[in-house]
Image (cartoon, rainbow, N blue to C red; front, side):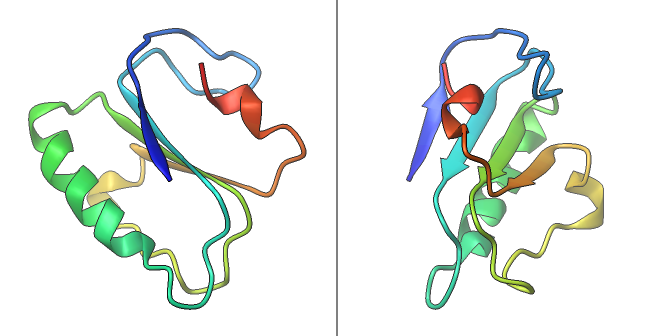
Length: 88
C-alpha cells in the first residue's frame, strides 16, 4: 500500500532528497493499476511541488506511465532486497 512519510529526512543512500514523500512498496502486475495513484499524486503535487512518489518493488513492463512533467518527482526503484531503506 501507500504510506505517507510524515518525517522529513535525507536518505542519502537512496538519493531521495528531503521532502514530502509517499512510498509504494509492492509488486505492480496484472490488475494493479499504479496510474490511479500517479493521478492522485499529480493533484497533490500541484500544491506541494517538492513532494516525491517512490515506487519500490517489481514492476511489470508497461504498467507505470509517468507524465513528463512529473519525471523529477516520481522515483522508480524497482526490486530491492532492502525496501525498509525507503521508509522512516
